[in-house]
Length: 182
Image (tube, rainbow, N blue to C red):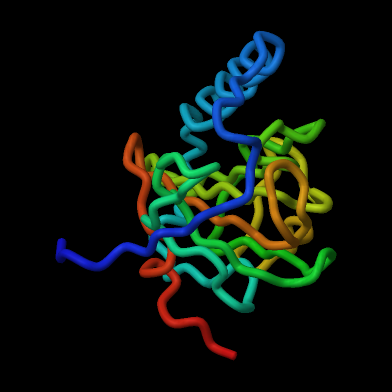
């Protein structure tokens, strides 16, 4: 583990002092419960053994670990990598795995959310998709199309947010896939 510099990104959002409604908080709890239940699945996949590939290639518009500022207030760090591409650009599996969540309806923040278990507690999440082409329980192979880039949920433009979690730790997906080839 080595230290590195973190970016600070100021993002448009609701006006300062705006608080979530009780209805939003209740919906959000249900969404977070679905995400936690999906992450608890161990499919036995061996995808964790593979060298990962980028699920989409394009301009990196958000890096892992950057500090997010919403309406002038510090927010949580950015726990994934954003790849900016037009809506409809295919998103592929970075490694073999099993689909553990394919949101039937857009989540409030993540939009159309897809999650894959790669085995050994390692999973990938793909946020803001315009469409999802796979189903829960489906085995997917590295490079197989999963869906397409979009801007559903809280997004300021079309992009893929790729997040990786190993057990309870959020990890930077970029080193898993290495340098992005053109």
